[in-house]
Structures are given as C-alpha cells and as structure tokens.
Length: 66
Image (tube, rainbow, N blue to C red; front, side, top):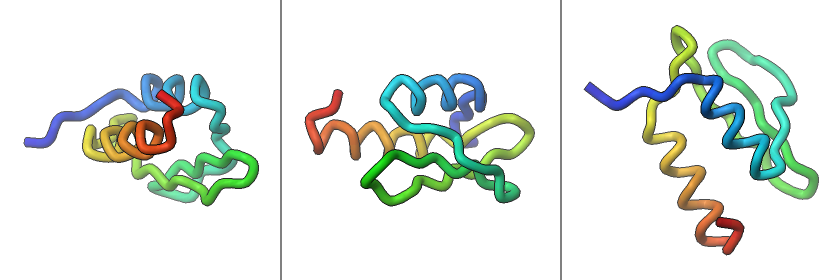
C-alpha cells in the first residue's frame, strides 16, 4: 500500500512554498502560483498519495526553491 499524507500537511507544504489552494474540483485540489501552471492533487478521505508530494518536492528542487 502506498504511503499516505494528510491533506492538512500537504496544504501547509504548498502554502509554505508560495502556492495557494484555488479551488476544489473533486477529487482534486487545485494549487496555483502566479506565472506557473496549476498543480492538481487528488485527495481521498483527507489523504494524499505520497507520490504526488514527492513529485512536487522534485519540481521545487529542480528549480532551486528548496
């Protein structure tokens, strides 16, 4: 079974890095940042598959933001 992370932790991580929750498009949460393409993160039972968080962290690292 895949590791799961609470949506609250994911929300905090995105916001800490300058992204805002724009809307909920079930089951997705849409995060936006000026000048960037949106990130759609699927949420099920208030949990997020850790793979999505890993991909977002890799995206930030590639850009030198973390």
